[in-house]
Length: 165
Image (spheres, rainbow, N blue to C red):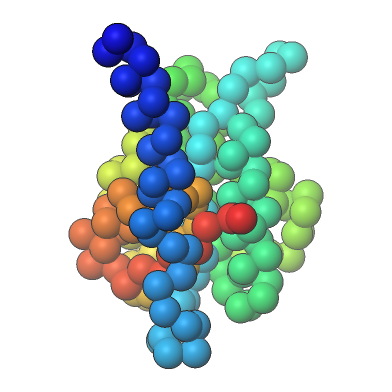
């Protein structure tokens, strides 16, 4: 019986989060604009002899690129090698390779060491500070939004959150 309960809770949690936490809290016109777009990696896998980005990460990248182009902002791609060997490319490097193919002129910075959301925020904030950035547009998916935005805010950054639809 507890298995059924657990499946129900896990299965409905993303819908609950989406209903409670909308993608934008206020109108863009009322805010100080962000200075960079931060895209969080979502893992990678080994397939056919090479590492590739996962579908969720690629969707985040595409949405982040759309936001960066629309707002004329640089991008920070975050993600290390959580379960991959040391010689494997980082999540951020794989996303950057895809970004160079989609938008060769897009300004991009990488954070390639993190293993989880807190480290992405901590190490990403260091990169952003080196470039004088204090306000960011954070791109992630809705179930991950609350945790990710809190992690980045804890690093002293002003965070606007945006999720891919």
